[in-house]
Image 1 (tube, rainbow, N blue to C red):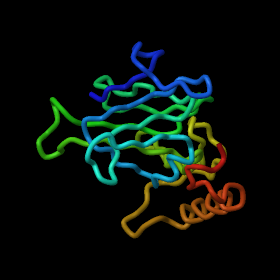
Image 2 (cartoon, one colour):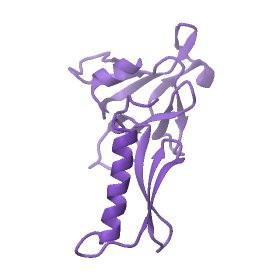
Image 3 (cartoon, one colour):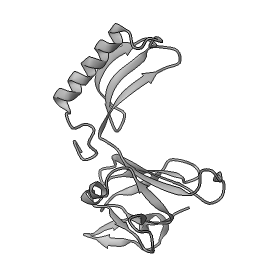
Length: 182
């Protein structure tokens, strides 16, 4: 498991900047970033290489006031939470015992967009197409459509997808950016 240092969580050392505690993640493996390094650093992440790791990263310091929230029982998945308690990303780490040889050892750091397109289905019912924010609240409901056929989406489905795309383009043109709308 990574060594996570956070005074409030473990009593270990932290960096104290501008009166805030910062979480430090020291990794025995190299981290893969989902977004460009500049995006992480622009948000206040500090990405370090403490040994020989070239352009790679083996230490991550979260921005002021940000923290990690456990998601999985084994500690391999954590949600990155900002100072306003919003889910801003994920930290996934697999190494050590219980890891399949073919998987190897790795860690992955990713950031969430504020909004996303959701295709939800309950049991065998119709698919609900909506635009949601990171907390899961529906911002725009395009509607429901049935299972798509072998040939693709039926005419009504195409209209719903176009309706959603029109709404998103008009109201949230930068919704795919991890930096927008926070």
